Image 1 (cartoon, rainbow, N blue to C red):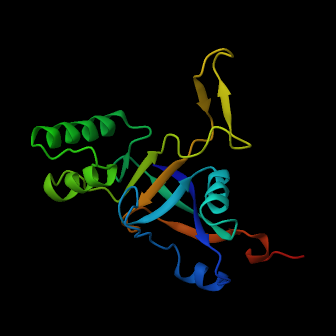
Image 2 (cartoon, one colour):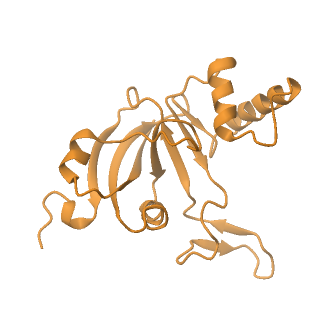
Length: 188
């Protein structure tokens, strides 16, 4: 198992004590990419800041936490090729049953894997939302492979984790790391 550092970006409602006592907070938006769960940015705090500036208009709090990452408990569509194949096979099965439409989303496929196929028994999922951030964002953390070609490496990709069940992941150390005046022990 690997210990992972993750970040949750929340709207700043001037409630730091409540955040640290009651967090993390689940997201249940109708258009949640991966279904209802606790959403985090994997490893790179820059992505948490990007989300706070883009989605929350600069009015945000970032909390850091740790959990024990394992492909046994986290469906990893970033680094586990077998999980990618399992996801593809579920899509193929849905297609063969005419359940796949132009409007089918990732969340719908995951729901099918959980509720119908009963093959998704993971406590979390890890994904990389390609084109989540603009290539024109500064800084953008992109490096070309060849100067005259469009291909590039994103070395701080927008990897998200959606934690469905905090138990069993050794989730720990949830605390505010931004803004600094909310950080415990911060002195001006």
